[in-house]
Length: 318
Image 1: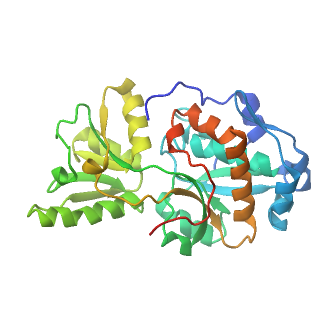
Image 2: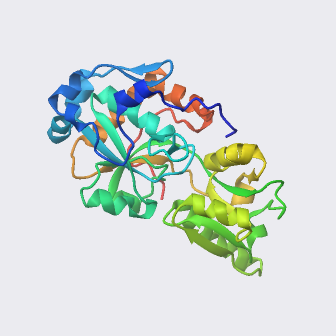
Image 3: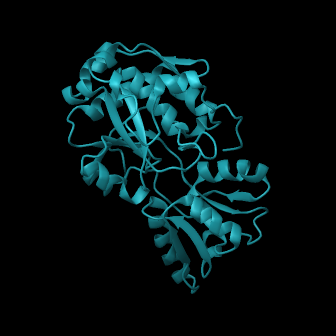
């Protein structure tokens, strides 16, 4: 993805309408049975989502009663989740906007709160959250903790210093060198699998440095502690295009450079403690796909190519 216009700055009027993403349960006074008649929600300029009574009826009774779906997300991981501006606690991004759209279609509010990525699934299992929207790859192992409603598909990429000074063109170019990755991600698992390629070529193993947040891996790249950061290709492109006006980083993508990976999609992780919630979210997401709202959100972030045509459940290949 390339740099995008600053179309994600949310007006105070919209903030007042959405009242979410601050890491709190602010605004829950309007939750409950009144939430189903809250009316249309303006998600983006030119995109207003109206509720569907039939989809609202699909929600579990406890979710309908509370009027909210509590969503965990790891911030920042742009353009999927980030803060509106430096020093703000208001979340924006692809996942946030899509979450607001799904919630609006269901007649409830999706309230987002920040949570470290490697602690997200345990927090859902502990009942602190009802769902996860955090660019999380749908994997069979993760399906033991949550059910996934698949909504995007994108592969990994390298974030490197401007101009790719280490000349990374094939994945074995990083053998024996320090690279960064976020802890608990599918990318960390993929990097560990790449060690086999180094061994096959008689090269020293990759020195994998794991960080609790990808922003920390980016700092390590800036300082020269690592030669590259392994992350989602969309995020890599966004950071390369926006950080310091595009003067600091470049990206390296493609299977030859990043190594083979399965086509597992990203999924909205849904708690197994709310029977019927994943079906309601799936139906709402599909309705947004069908009426073009889903594509408008992705296009707003200049990434329509990562969209998928059908909202599936637990579609991971491995």
